[in-house]
Length: 108
Image (cartoon, rainbow, N blue to C red; front, side, top):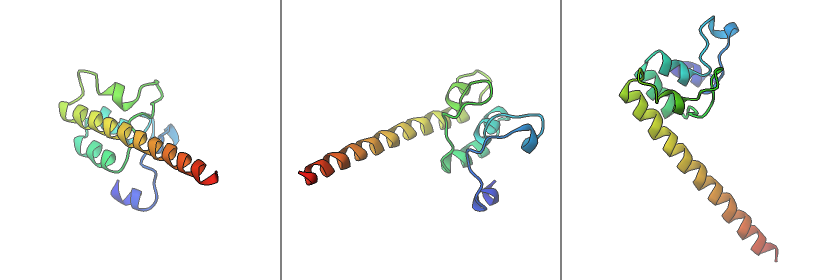
């Protein structure tokens, strides 16, 4: 996976029958959760995998990890990444609002 990302692969690239064969999961992160690959999930989350992208059944990583069959370690990683992602998005939104406010003051 590391080499594919180095070569420019998108960490959130959607899979398909054409690219992965019959077993499609939606994204590499969702594939890692379903196949119970803890280290793959950790690797993908550390590189910014999106926990909100839905798989073909309409379920995202945050919803998927609530299932009983998901390992606690994977559940915890996805939940923490989701919280961090929300925090980062909120901080970005706040920064945009502040820049717009400052820009408006400079225009006066």
